[in-house]
Image 1: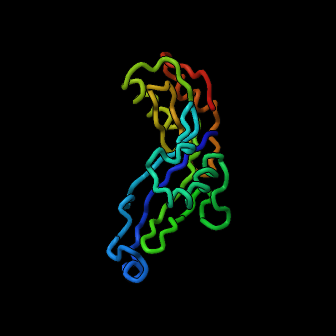
Image 2: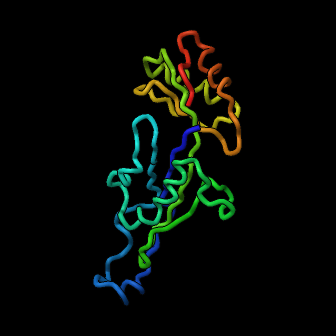
Image 3: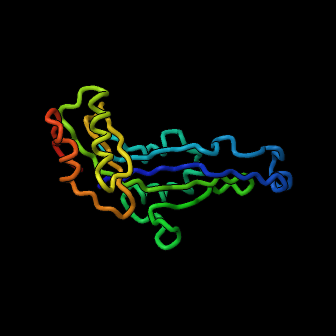
Length: 181
């Protein structure tokens, strides 16, 4: 099983009374860096490692300081916040700017990488995607033609057997599975 981490900006606050009282720029307003609905995906598989790039410029340094520990835990497959949230794969956190905090939803995404031989076009990816999404327990599928694999995201607390994924792909004689991570 592999893991990604999805970070979503779910809210922004602005405490103008604190800004007027304490800041050098009393009219600084809400955080200009993030917008509600922004999503960021962090991964560490197949040569990608966006965590060590600190989001590759996609994150404010102050926010990164607050949320990076949760992102790292998710990428390792750990419980982000056991017993605190309804789903231990998820955490709600905020940056440390007390006058204009940004609130983040941080989610661990569990998936399997199905390496597929024989995919050559978008029609192939559509066929493979549909077949894998029909496997019980699969939440959604992202087929990466450029990498020759499918990322199969699984539902919470559901075991999806590798053999079921293999059969979903190999039901078509043009495709074969060379490995599942």
